[in-house]
Length: 114
Image 1 (tube, helix red, strand yellow):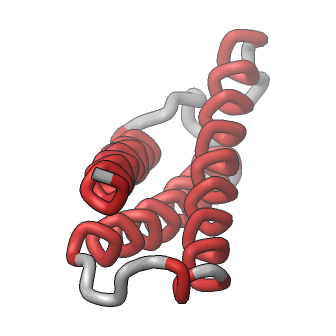
Image 2 (cartoon, rainbow, N blue to C red):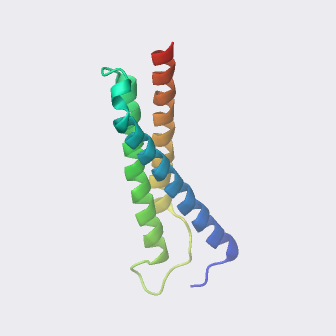
């Protein structure tokens, strides 16, 4: 199966976006844990934000595994290349979880500084 140029680009962009969100999510959780003693202890907003950053990371790993499975399917001969629901579902969930986490982070900072 030969991938067309636009298919290669779509795969690369999906992979890069997934990796970027994983990196951002894990970095934010790490920094929050390192400097957590500077934040109020009983903040539900911060807890929800960290939870959704971790959920975003898990969905991102799922999406990367699905991308790998798309390139190396179990069926032989390989089918036409396409990013089906096996990639779109975890990728969409990752983006949604990251968006929720960012929203909770903004609400936490606004409440903490307000």
